[in-house]
Amino acid sequence: MKALRFTNTIHIHPLFFLLAISALLTGQIYPFIVLFSIVVIHECGHFYMAKYYGWRVSKIEIWLFGGAVVSDEHQSRPIKEQVQVTLAGPLQHVWIFGLLFFLEWAVGPHPLLSTAVYYNGVILLFNLLPIWPLDGGKLVFYFFSQVATFRNTQLFTLAFSLCAFLSLSGWMTLYHHWTLASIWLAAFLLIEQFLEWRRRSYVLMRYLLYRSSNIKDNLPSKFIKVRDDLLVRDVLKNLRANCRHVYVLKRPEGSYIVDERECLDAFFTRGDANLRLRDIPNISQ
Image 1: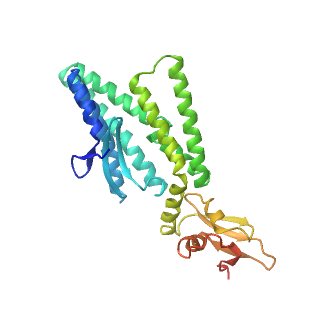
Image 2: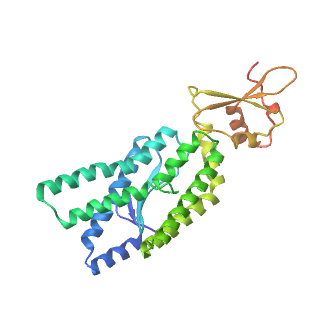
Image 3: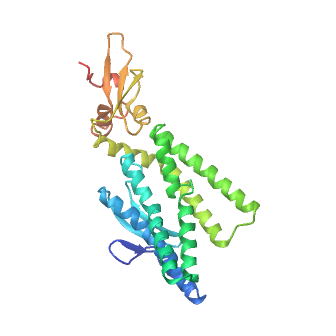
């Protein structure tokens, strides 16, 4: 179902209006407005931080379960940018808390302000759950990316996310905390994790494509001893973030070094994923 364009930046899913009508008919329109105002502010935090770093961001989409900044650059940009874009959403809740507490101090207690404080806290804590694709799940991904290859980071993140999801689901079942809304949210999270698993190869390819044109010379070099018959495609599956890979081939005639640039060039420019490292020019000569 196609989203309706509210502005050039914000698109609203048609199902959102069904929820709005339901809130109006049940006398919950003001809490509804408060809830989704907080959601929009949260997503604007992500959006403007991403634009600050020059990411390709197409829109903020508001749908039945919240919102999302639509960009194809998650998981491919430098780790510093990814962390700051991810944290920019939760950080909005800090000043929202400050504003709400100030209003309570200025005008006195009010049920709507209490509701806003509650919603602000719930949305913040929910987004920080270590479950993909929530902000907490993305932070888990960034942590693993510092200690594992990109490919393994994908697997570790989804495995950790699924364990966290099952643990939370078990706790909610044990203490009878399930509601219709939480069931829908759980279904959404489970589907998103499945879809991320299905598109993991595409995400890896997008990361390699970004890396092929954005290798920085000031990154620390990681020297790796490998067999000279290793294929380029196997090498690229094991790249790690925040370092430059230099491959030292085991050759009887002496040192033979291949830079990751050459592997990426062979893969994308020459289209030869089955090229062996020994057939790539020796940069040590």
